[in-house]
Length: 87
Image 1 (cartoon, one colour):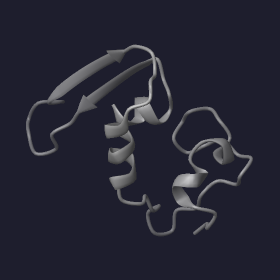
Image 2 (spheres, helix red, strand yellow; image 1 turned 90 degrees about the vertical axis):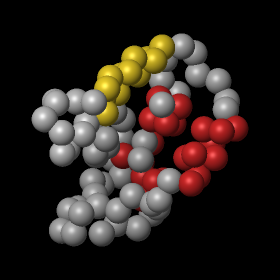
Image 3 (cartoon, one colour; image 1 turned 45 degrees about the vertical axis):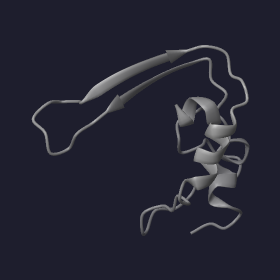
């Protein structure tokens, strides 16, 4: 739900994967509907810890495709999640 909200998407599908369980996934969710502002989602997004790439992983250049797979340029998508710094 957070990614659907963050990207202002109309449709979203998500899977809950339980690593220690024998089942391939625990749950699946399909959410469809218009985007509208939500104070609780804004709080959840602000409470998320900063994402940092794995040691040795490089971030793409500002004009390269975003690592999240959205198809947008990195600067228009997830750059602000990493700040201007690159590791």
